Image (cartoon, rainbow, N blue to C red):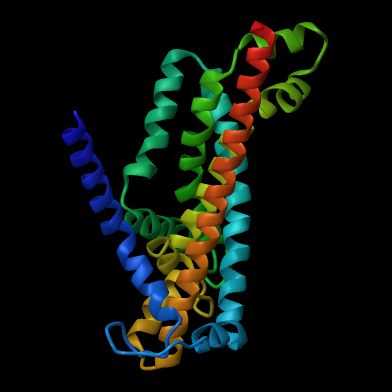
Length: 274
């Protein structure tokens, strides 16, 4: 039994090492003066100084973050409303909604981006230099993942709570706002965070739908790796490290908050049983 546990731990460690080793190597070299990974180098903060003092990089990061927040808000609203509508639908309609929601998730991003570009720019004649095609394309990409985060929470909720609120005189809108949404808030928050991450990570949809003068982090990184500006390339190592640390802190904070709630619930249950 102990031997099996040791093998399992070794496999888990190997998988985690495979996943995180490239990120840790990149983070290590972001604190050096090396011009490429693998070179001998000395400790330096120049990459971070370049990252936070170069106006071009600052504008690119600001635009990407604002885009991610706008897309995440729209996706969270649409995904949450879609999940609630599907949950309270008839079984036949529910199956149709779930299948239609799964298509953008399984479909390749390049197909989604190209299709949105053709539909909005070519068919409807919307100017590509506006942000509408980009926001619409990324919302189509992110909203189904919000649906998948919110729908299970609705399944865990007692449906009689909503009906009880209606019986007590609450309007449907009030019952949803004060009863349903607080119950599914963890799923909404998870969907919002996932939408932000997907927007920041997206390359194909942004490539086909973004204005010519605008770059997201993903498109900027690809273009920078093809150029010859070494200081920009190495500054992007620092940017990758900062993003990883922010995501790590968010995940740790969410898990800690969830654990605290679970411990509080366990203590309350013990008091009641006692």
